[in-house]
Image 1 (cartoon, helix red, strand yellow):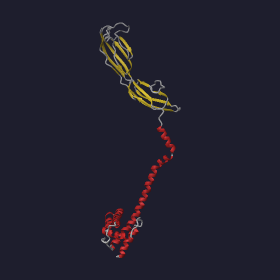
Image 2 (image 1 turned 90 degrees about the horizontal axis):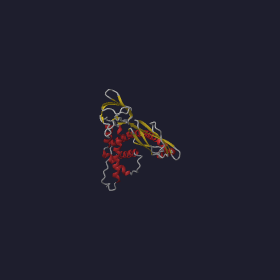
Image 3 (image 1 turned 45 degrees about the vertical axis):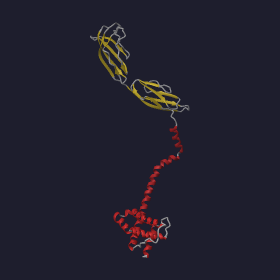
Image 4 (image 1 turned 90 degrees about the vertical axis):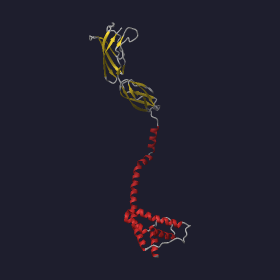
Length: 325
């Protein structure tokens, strides 16, 4: 029996040669006690019969738990050594432990090898990921250049209010940069201007590119641009059905309003189809006279309005007007 006890002690001493703490000889008695009480033979059989050799880590953890408990028991100074029960190991338990540790040593070695390979892969991935960052960190000049580029206020920077709308569209343009000499072009064919904050009117629908070329006090030149979208909603207002050109100041002229119309022609004729009066342009009107400047007779006249809007569309209205005096 003494030989069996020595076998257990030597077995654990060999298997835990890397254990950092110095182990008192008296501790091994408690190890043997704990292992016997925990049923090491049952632990070994359970792990290898039910879950196979992949349970190495769990099995070792179970043994470690027993050993840890025993070491804690051993360190308790208040423990009465006289009342401690030492359970003697059997031949079977020694044999089972030897078998268990022999298998475990092989599996642990294999696990260590796998972990080593996986660690190499992880380190390689980390190195590959951080390589560009490390390269940039080493290039202090490049870092300083990026900081200066994005920290420095631009020379040319356009803001537009509004950036779109219907004609006539009045746009307020501002250079928020540091440029002192500002040259503007509007993309609508109109002459550019040299101003800090110009006001421009777009009177034809379209999408225009406003460009700014600006020079700062150091002579550096920069450009900026912005899109302005101009839309047009052209229309002709309701045309009156009568007027009385008698000089009393009330409906003395035949006139009507239009919106966003760039060209217009109006033709007036009598019941016989004879043309009495015509005008061209959005500001035209009829004062009740014929083409010779003579007063037209009272009665019903007809008109045809032909117009072109800023949106490029053609508009036409036909109707009648009653002239009274």
